[in-house]
Image 1 (cartoon, rainbow, N blue to C red):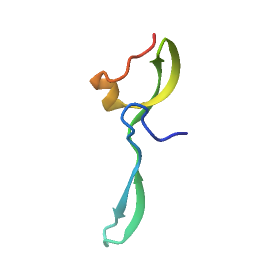
Image 2 (cartoon, helix red, strand yellow):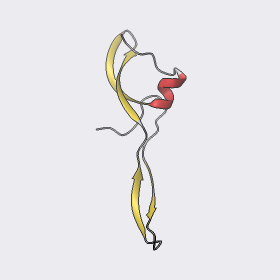
Image 3 (cartoon, rainbow, N blue to C red):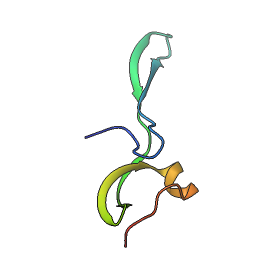
Length: 63
């Protein structure tokens, strides 16, 4: 599964989880991607889009 938004290109970022004893372990922050039907020209296709692009109206949903 592609973890990248087709509209803005937002992908996963990486950081560290910190336990109570401050031991650092690597972790991954995934964007909130939804698989929706998007109009690509005149043809609809399914693509992963982040929720910020859906709310902002950067993509046109196919009905």
